[in-house]
Length: 118
Length: 111
Image 1: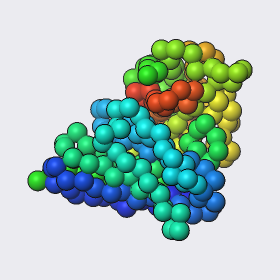
Image 2: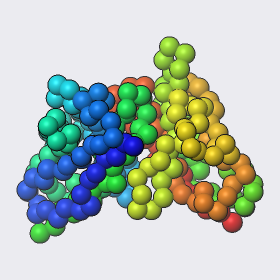
Image 3: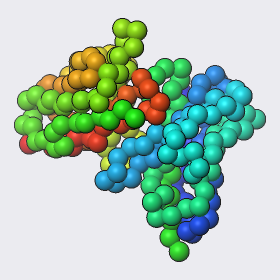
Image 4: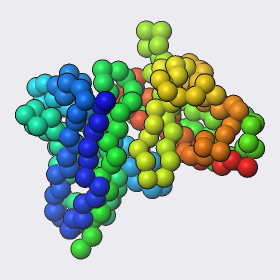
């Protein structure tokens, strides 16, 4: 079955960067786009962007173009998202989700809670 | 960006009754005869769960008491009859246009 494994939490200092991981299993990793979504209480869901694991090509929400960088490691079926220059506004739960070839999100990771604090 | 406005923000429904949630898009999410609107359920500490895709299609494994309808800019999620386990927050999401966007959520309480 399709599984997306994400670390539960990351504590990072303001101004630093963090690289979040999403390890996929149960399907052919390179066949389907991986998406990343940010969720903050009171702020709702924000789609950050998507990456094609077969060639590394990515599309970003304009709002996150200078904040997030999506990459993949095909050898380990893992997608990554680096979030840079962290501020309190970046404290959130970040989910990876694959579209599995469809324009909807049937499979989600458990999410990584990022806390930005000195 | 396409803005999705959900209403109400919260509602309380008696066990066995009907819950109706509305999602209005700032522009059409239809393309080539399909409506690119999806619905999710989220419970605390869990990722979202897909309920309805393409406006009215029930995801595999989701109980038939969930149904979706609508096209263009107006969409509705119905839950009938409501059960205790349906207490959650529900979100609409459009995938017709980048960036994909989500509604603000509707919190459902079961009376």
